[in-house]
Image (cartoon, rainbow, N blue to C red):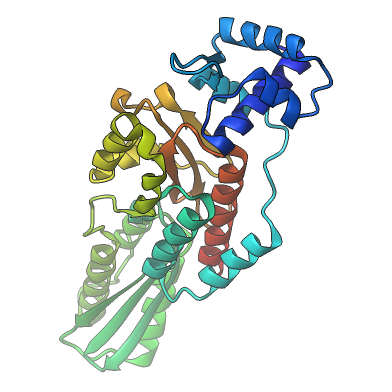
Length: 340
């Protein structure tokens, strides 16, 4: 189906159904949209769309509603994503600029995304394994007690205290700091850990023991003690808007929100470069969530996606507006992490 007129009719049906939550008839389409054709022509187009599986007729209504296939074509043929309003952009900047650390960024982001889309927002925490080392600092608190500070590309900061038997002088401290920076900064964590293990501590002695102790502390800080992939959810109350389809759309989604593994699979793999992924209905990994759509994208500094954020909700949603909000919040979070 490539005819422009049929595509315009399908677009009008999707927009009206999302806005009114009611099946759409030919008379309403002619009245609300400047399609430039008669109601009879619109009825013929609707019949063709139904025959091709893009719309369907609920048995209780004379109107039509989009199918998953219809939503898919609508999303694929979007020429532009609805731009964010000035007020929405200001709300994003105001809320996220006030974040004090990574936890705060994540909590504010899901709250903001759920408010902008009126859907359930889901955000995956950046995992350590996907991070790179931004900086390593070594501070002598006393001659035999060192503070090791690891700063990651996610903005996460890890600190470890290292006790050494022999006092560490300023020159030895500067030399060790330089070696750590050279080995680790800019590397992904697994590579950084290998490079640190390979550091030559010199001949056996006090310097060797100090280097070994600091390396052990740094590598330990790089290991993800919260190995379970963490997910934060916001805006669950928005599901109350879909009470008319509670058993088919809302109840399975509520159950899924309790399972982080399910949510991670729903979000899919993180994608960089600002690409927004839309999975509609049966395209998702769980058939029990066949009435659910997911709009998601990756976020992270530069072009490298550390994790994924997005929204989960019934297939009847404002796809252009939701895609714009997901992309905008992801870009803003990425910028915050890049500047952290």
